[in-house]
Length: 529
Image (tube, rainbow, N blue to C red; front, top):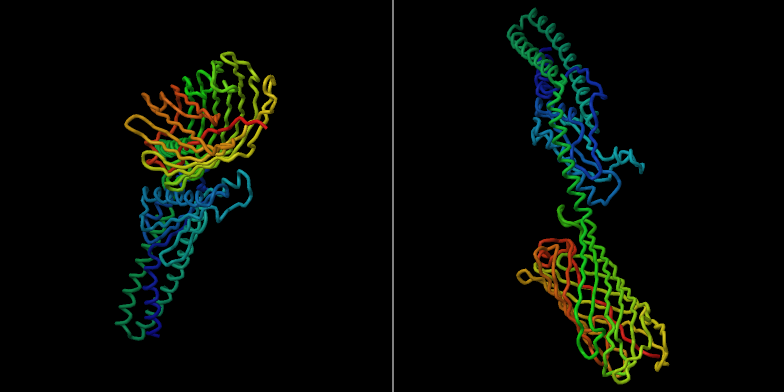
């Protein structure tokens, strides 16, 4: 009997450290606590403050308890984006609990992305429910007492405490039985052992009373937030959410655009027109995931259009029949993708060319047809190596709709039908900066389709400068702008103005996003059948 009594006393004594941090009765209801959900693409707390403050108080008062915080996202968006977003949501809750009393060693966070949806429906309410943080509370003995929302975590925390109190009542009953046995032992004359058991019993009673006192304090609801405290928390969270939303919106909607126009004279024996004018506009729209949160995407959509006009020049020429003027409408659209220092682009190119052709007899020109036009199309590919101060690359163009008949207005002295042929080309291009000047240049080998001729050059150099990056003057010179004269090349020099939020070459190295690329002008030749 003595051995059994000692075993019971030892079991009670050993059980006390496991019960030292347990909890007691509460009047809290699950509806007293709000859930923690987030706005779309946000990791900023906008609700759940009283619940989190309550949980922080519980953890501060009982440092042996642990909490696992798991962030979730809804089913929209990529796995990579949702994984990062869910981890940031869990971290936000952890930082809030630490700020109001919980120790970092009590908290563990992770993100589940969109792998564990609460509601699989694809509607607004389901998306809101899935943008959440779940809370798991673990007792000092390793038992999970709260697994799910913060509401269930706190409720089960309290329920677990109530269960521990019932165990304490059982211990007290065992102590009463033990006291009866001690009295019986005293009656039998085992006074020494009885004295030790009495001392242990008194200690156990004292510890049990302390546990009840701690548990009563544990389950007390915190004092409600004052109006000033609530306003301060809401204002701080709202301002942070607004700043984050504005920053993310600016990144998602960042676009680059450039408009410009120029005018200048033409030169050379095969010149087209006595002066040349050009109007252009282009846009670069990055998209996709950036390398870092403050960078736009590594993919881009490009739109590039221009209109070139050469005023008809009817002065005497060395050729009997010559192109004396043109209207050229060019449109390019396509995609570019950047992989580190390498950028690749593919584009569709469309060209509507309208020519003025004159027959010369001495110094008197005779118009054969005016503004006769046709439509051509081709495909363009570019490959650029991006460096800190610019790019260097290669390009190629191949005709898709590579021929088009010209509708003449007069067949005087020209009975053979004429047509335009899209000229395939390949070349190199570069862009860079020198002090405050940006230089862009290209050199192409343009295929010839006349017997006895193989290829001819097409080249351009553009130098831009100005007071700001959004307003620039430029000087450009080129040879064989679009129309390729097999015998007599034409050159031009133009002075122009351009404006817009375009990326400058000196900034290419400071970004991992897509950068502008050189799309060559289409070239074509006038042939007869």
